[in-house]
Amino acid sequence: MLKVILDTSVFISAVLSKNPETAPNQILKKWQEGNFCLVISPQLKEELIILLLRKGIKSESIENLLTIIETLAIQIEGIYETNFLDNIDPNDNIFLAAAFEAKADYLVSLDNHLLSLKFFHGTQICSPSLFLKLIY
Image (tube, rainbow, N blue to C red; front, side):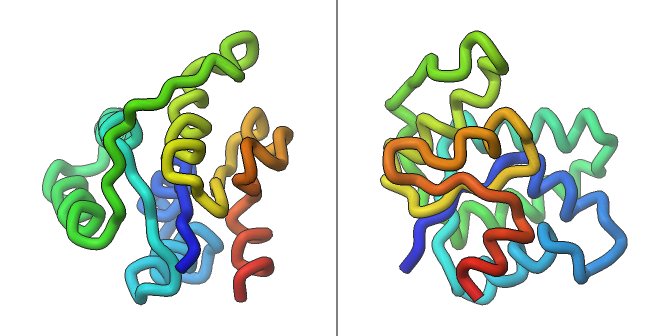
């Protein structure tokens, strides 16, 4: 089963979209249907909560999403760190560290700093629409 890291940008896009056909929404649906394994670390979960709150998402919706994540996702310890993107966007390093730690197949993002890398230690980095084309 494919192991996938989803950047918080993908979650936020899905949560804020009213269209269930967007690529981020399709990805969340495919994950919840068991088509791939989502991998999450404590750092990724913390960033997701902070950004969802910042976007004004209701606490109840955030709690529901976290319950689904905790039920269905592979939880990693988050023990790896990287400084690979320190000169560009140090906040993105948590996604690369999680991908490395989990030996993830894909890191799906809407962030150009991550997308420009294309690969990181064997993990393919791609947009939501490309991810859907690659695996379906």
